[in-house]
Length: 305
Image 1 (cartoon, rainbow, N blue to C red):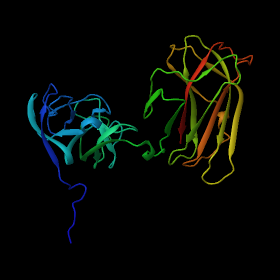
Image 2 (spheres, one colour):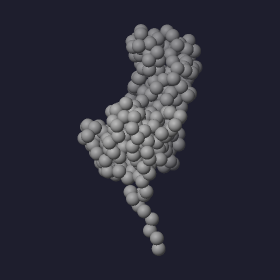
Image 3 (cartoon, rainbow, N blue to C red):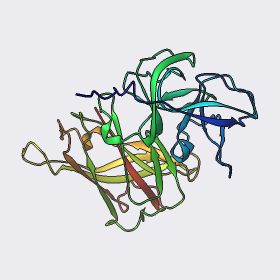
Image 4 (cartoon, rainbow, N blue to C red):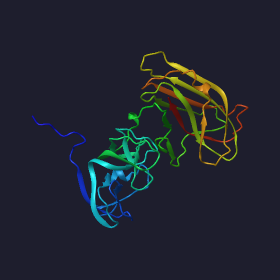
């Protein structure tokens, strides 16, 4: 009877590549494939979660290699000298990506490309960690695999204008949902699936267009727990004619405004895979609505506990 190798003892893939990072590298330094026609050059990166990891995978120097010199780099397999930063605590089994310091890895956040799996923990707030790890085929950290024990961030988009990575929201230029002040019936609605491990709603935010002049906007909100996996009766919570002070910032930037707690405190407990239906209606003709212009609602942000 033959016995296969363990994950840790699987064959290592070591390749000969040219270091053109502009400086020497040493054993444990993290590198990425450089975009050159020859396909035989690597470089360091100071981009956290560098997408170049998805284009060529991660490499780790296994020896000291001068700039513009060829040397050996680990492409796949076990190492005990991978350099890491522990500002975000690394636990055994965490995926690893590039850090903002050249040659260093860090724990991958939701959506980050990864190139290795940690086999040793490191939780010190510096870049001096040297740990056991396995380099593997690159991928992207799956949001569905992340526990909500620390509070999950869910950004619901009204169209494809956002790029979302973890808690970072990048606006791409399209404004596709506009509430006009003189039309009461303009509304937006979205569905949010409760993530694994979540038990309650921590908070909900409007993501809207800021402007230099502050004013009040009157909103009706309604939240329905529409698909309770425990087969409980649906729960409905609504908050009517709530006045929100908005604006007074940099025009066109994203303004984050918290829902009043009355809009969702009636929901109570939630369970993984429940679905929240969130609707927003602007009461533009209300006497307290002083915005007196289009209000551009870009999305809804929900945090669970």
